[in-house]
Image 1 (spheres, rainbow, N blue to C red):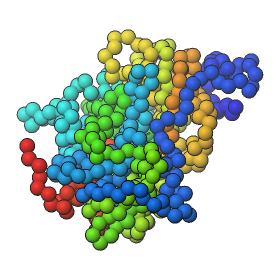
Image 2 (image 1 turned 180 degrees about the vertical axis):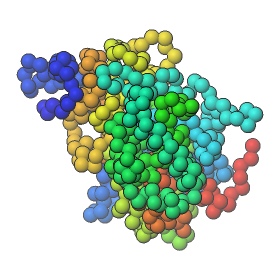
Image 3 (image 1 turned 90 degrees about the vertical axis):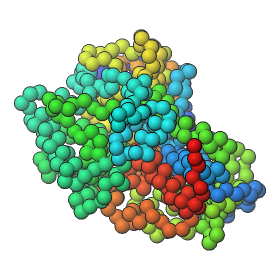
Image 4 (image 1 turned 45 degrees about the vertical axis):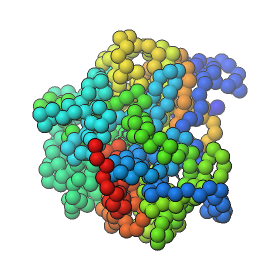
Amino acid sequence: MTLPTLPALQRREWLALMTAWGLAGCRSDEPPALAGGWVGASAGRGHRLRELKSGALPMPAVQRRASVLVVGGGVAGLAAARALDRAGLDDAHLLELEDEAGGNARGHRMAGMDCPLGAHYLPVPGEAAGEVRELLADFGLARVEHGRWLWDERHLCHSPQERLFFEGAWHEGLLPPAEPGSETLAQYRCFSALVGQAQREAGFSMPALRTPWTAAHTALESTTFADWLARHRLDDERLRWYLDYCCRDDYGAGATTVSAWAGLHYFASRHGFHAPGDEETEREPMLTWPEGNAWLTRRMAAPLADRLHTGRTVLRVDEGRHAVEVLAWNEAIGQAERWTAERVVLALPVFIAARVMATPPAALHEVAAQARHAPWLVANLHLGAALLERVGAPPAWDSVPYGGTSLGYVDAMHQSMRPHAGPTVLTAYVALPASERAALLADDWRPWAQRVIADLLPLHPDLSQQVRRIDLMRYGHAMRVPLPGTRSSPAHQALSVLPGRVTLAHADLAGYSVFEEAYTLGWQAGQRVAQQLRPSPRHG
Ligand SMILES: Cc1cc2nc3c(=O)[nH]c(=O)nc-3n(C[C@H](O)[C@H](O)[C@H](O)COP(=O)(O)OP(=O)(O)OC[C@H]3O[C@@H](n4cnc5c(N)ncnc54)[C@H](O)[C@@H]3O)c2cc1C
């Protein structure tokens, strides 16, 4: 058994880990006592597409028709289906590879407690995200009173929201502390001013498509965020760690990899950046649920009823003059089915869309070849009892260690109203470099479980005694990394308005992945297709 590297572990914490894993003084061949395993995704289904390259396409056993076929049941595909439904198209169908819709925003359950498998929060959407606001209003999460949007407090992240484990103690918020008069504070203020300047001069919005792309954006996108920070002499260790953490958390890659546009967009499109002592230091409220954004995707999927076909891996999309032919593999019965549709919305990552299309447009081919996707690991740890607390800020929804590459964990029971701490599920997130993708596909989950525990042990030395089970979800290609040049490329820009019967919709088209981008792109694609088919809008 390979032990993880534990740079920050104390001797006592090492012993706790060894004991929990049956390693201290035991036979080395003894299996660890911990239960767990891989859950949630079927790598084999996705890889069926790769294997197809050499083999012939299977003969369909079933023939079906639909006016519109949505391929991919993540946020974007579900949004497209919703828009089609709203436009009165009641024979639009959706094909999804996994056994449940939701894509990166699906949920899980351990010991009777809901927890996320991927996406877990949504910042309260601003004016530019009108479609998302309307969705949330439809779900009863928001209402407008006297022209102001009011949010249902039960679904806003309860206080305390975040805490940082810094120099042996918990601190409220995620920004590392900065003493008055320190260089750290001066650099926080300088970065805050630069974000404000970028907001005024270039303009940023969420979703990004609401701001016209200009030469100022292209210039910011021509360099990495780390180079941009260096150019502005922003080299303070705490600031740089925090900004790098934000990039890894939202984009799956750090400041040396993502573009300066992406690094600034994280702040400038939403809440800005506030140094301690600024007038406005409160983080914007965010919506979250024990099962994460699956709370939303399950409600988006429900109205589709039997028009949602899960366990269908789409193998080929062939656009003809009068219709589109779609070949799908029914995973449950091991048979191919052929669908004929007037239009198709391909709500798939760009590299999959390029692979399934019989004749992909040149721009899609180019974007797919340039795009890089970060692998992610999500670990749900079922704890039998509350963990012992260290000094400092009390337990929060999101807990993060300072330094290193760990993204920390969120607590699935944080939103429950229970008055005392107790059993819970902690969801730990690990963004991985592409070089670890192959290892992530290995059968043995245990080294990954050990790695997650090792990451969290410095925060909670008693963690290994309380973990009852670890369920691990792996994403080989979780999210597109906003590299320099991503959005500025002419091929990228061409993808938003493809001629023909196939419309693309996926967060990848934004160049990076968040709910607001996926939903808006999906909704717009659905609306565009509905207009092309010109049905009469549904009233009432
Ligand atoms: C670990 C993780 C944490 C995240 N956390 C957050 C967060 O907290 N907040 C946030 O806003 N965003 C978060 N994100 C980003 C998240 O990706 C987006 O919010 C959003 O869910 C993306 O939706 P999508 O529809 O664009 O893509 P996807 O979720 O990738 O959907 C694509 C769908 O297509 C299906 N599919 C693929 N191939 C085929 C095929 N051949 N045939 C049929 N179906 C196919 C897939 O199974 C999937 O369901 C997170 C992402 C990850 C991976």
